[in-house]
Length: 110
Length: 113
Figure 1 (cartoon, chains in turn brown, green):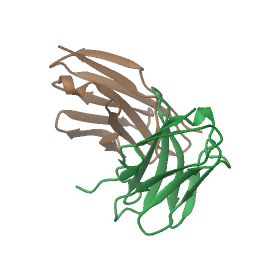
Figure 2 (cartoon, one colour):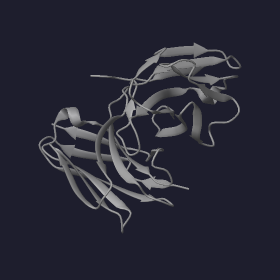
Figure 3 (cartoon, rainbow over the protein chains, first blue to last red):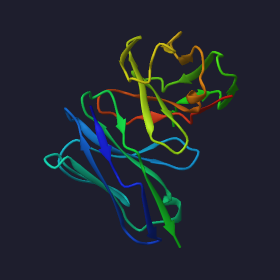
Figure 4 (cartoon, each protein chain N blue to C red):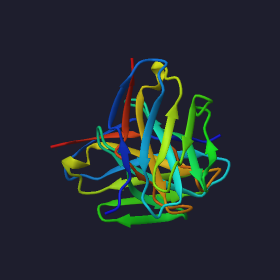
């Protein structure tokens, strides 16, 4: 089977930096993705790592360590609109099936 | 920008009734998915579909569920006899190919009374 663990909630201040961690257990591994979901909305793609290292996309960065089965999403210069749920998702036993973690609810305070 | 569209946005049904949720994936995408999200919980994989057949399905996707691509554009999820616990948001998604970004529709909220 496949499982992912991420914190349920994180609170941070506007302008700050926050890191959301994700650990996974899978029989195989093709890549780790991050999705953002605002309340009542659809998940939207943020970032994808297939290889070890850091991927940067604007204010968002994602890191992967395959040897540690670990990744994180880094959000910089937090804005109020970043308040949302963030899901890590893994392609484990299949490159065509994405399994989501339980999500981390990020609350950005003024 | 191309998008995945889903109808209806919200459906209320009585327990035991059949429901069909419809999706139009992005036109050049080859792999289609249905996911389910119970309120406040995680996004759960139901089924993937490629080349007019199911490629993978989860334990949730039992005999009550079926998927179909009746024509070149639509992709449907049918629940034959709805149960209270089927109440959830159902998301359709599609990708171009292996490892691609998953594009989600806005979802169909199903409420079973």
